[in-house]
Length: 404
Image 1 (spheres, rainbow, N blue to C red):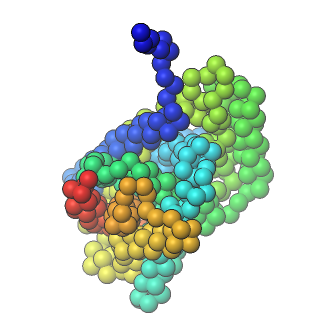
Image 2 (image 1 turned 180 degrees about the vertical axis):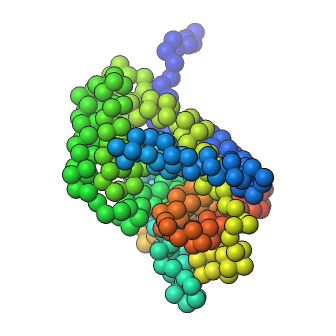
């Protein structure tokens, strides 16, 4: 007589990873929908009879001046709340490097190459437009390099539900590497002059955070103050304060030990991701996307090389750079597209990656700080390009989904 095993079969690491990717996709898809709603609301408010109140709230200054923290509401959201988003990105990056697709060079080489191609081609296109055109500015070369994970995954979920999970994982890996590149660009090229003492204090606090993780400390009474010190000192140093989120995310332990049902990184992501996806990023979209069209010269903005370079970079440069780099990398390592997919699917992922939005808006604000006309042209270009890329992605994803 056959006996039934009393113990449940332990799920394989592949199944656990698939479930983790699915959970991450759900959160980011939810955030993408909220981003769209928040950005639309911001544009409507900025161009409605409530525009004065909207602008007053955005520019309302809050915080202690003696600590250099009398910041506007918009700055608190961009520098403070958005650090939660970058903390989640840091957690995801570390997981991918230690356990995910980036931990295996053979699997990682194609999406990594695609990500770099998707950053280099848009930057070169932007530079070409702004060198050749009158009134151009090279300061915005980093704007079209970024992919918005949440917005891109929301479009993918809406129009590409039938696509294989391997393709979603490819886009997720590509977007994460893209975020790492954007973080490096912000830290190196779009931060102010660095104050070394404050930077050292920030690094010391982050090191203490890392040491507490290694010592298996579990109380938030230790981590929250260290995180706040890291953020504040980095803010004082001149480096963009959101980088603190990435540094702390990388400091969290991702290995589950005996007696733990989840690793600290998994617990942290479950706790913080809803706040990042449901509050921080949508609020940033609400405050960053509000461009008062009546306050700018639309003819000048739309004919600006800045506008043309960003739109061309995101809509054309992204898909071309991603596809060409992926094909070259696959040829060099004798590989192919993600399992169960075709190169046409990779080309479609390149179109999806052209949705820049959140990080592109952030870089636009940093690149053209103090230049309102250039800032408006850059932000308008990001909105237009992301909309064009989203529409093109929706059409092409729907066509490819029929194949599956």
